[in-house]
Length: 229
Ligand code: ADP
Image 1: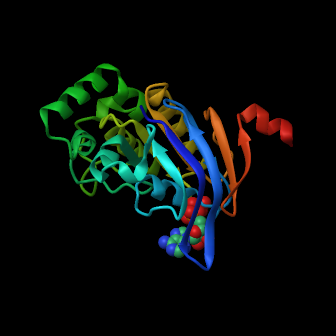
Image 2: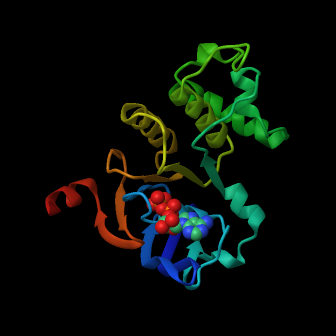
């Protein structure tokens, strides 16, 4: 569960400007996969294709072995969790913000399991503040702390795949690294994690795909890519 295959995918928003050209890659279930490349390389476009905000013009995308055009929007939304880049928090407690959107008994079970697994502490690093009010009249959280709340909210949905699009992130490098590290730990081997980033500051990826102008220019592990230089 959580496997993605791109086969010879080409995509354009308008015919005059090809964006992705013959992009192929496989993300095995449970791996941490990095999409790296300069701004405009096509990283966010790949993420949008995973949601079927757009369909490809040629090639195909498979999700757990099934052509993505045959998967319902509902199951995609259930299977994929996105950590937004800029998190707006409610003027309420951290707990309310983490739980937001999950009200069913099943959700509560998932949350209970996650709590037992110590996710709050590992991701958020401030479990003691769980009941604390945040926002305008409460505690001011930094950008990194807000993103941790967003991560907790996403991970507690227990998606098969977590997407972290830091392609245009405003966070500093150290904060980004800390967030990637905690997310990788939480996802480890159970949840596929796809990180899009402009630089190769991604330290925990099993595989890295380097894109430039919509084409794959390198791929491999950290070690393999370093040897190429
Ligand atoms: P990255 O995430 O790597 O910075 P993007 O996938 O956002 O790259 O963009 C790849 C290319 O697609 C860029 O040239 C960008 O201008 C173009 N692009 C992105 N979104 C749209 C859109 N909605 N309509 C037209 N062109 C777009």
